[in-house]
Length: 277
Image 1: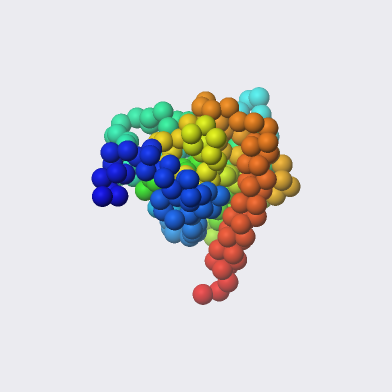
Image 2: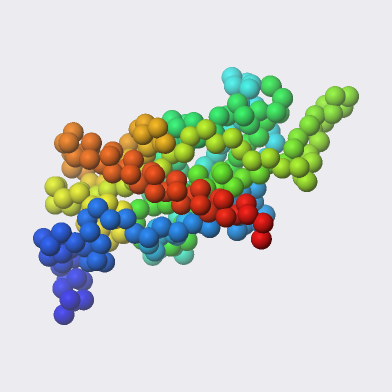
């Protein structure tokens, strides 16, 4: 009976739970799903991470390549994120070029990298005007069940912390770069941006960490990104119901709490990865 009600009237089905201040999966309105993290699982990448938030599973692999800096930024390298939503992660996505949601997610990640200065692009420069690193950050969703942006950001941050780039020196006589693969160094992570996503239900009820079904029934979605200094790095709200200043402030304070939890998780996993096996 419940399954039939859920299929025929998904909105009413969810409302029947929300009246009791809970959700179909048993969570409270402000409760995040269990978040797990593994790092360094892609041996061919310079850094990698696999994140699960509930059933949503996202993997990030980072590959460093040598290139020339841009003429207008001779002392900076590049960071190029790309979010991929293949058909294998959900029936809502089709094969072919990136769809609207994948493009929007890639742009969002690029904006957060820029606004938060997670890695200083000057740190990626090897020889001013001649040689720098470009970090390709490929983020792939393996299983889509809502809250993609939070998962992408955790995967990116953990993979950047896991990344080790080989030592590069430039031969003074030939000016040819020489790469020493045995000597690898970690990146200098300046800021740790973490996202918290919310949806608005029936124009008024705020729900944190939505599932794909909850997202499809929402009247607005919002993602708040903060760093360790509780600074607001990004606010992403594509249309939908407008939010009062009070509700927005509530989202930001919840996002700072979420930031502390995620940082603890990343630090714990990073530390255990460093301990000798």
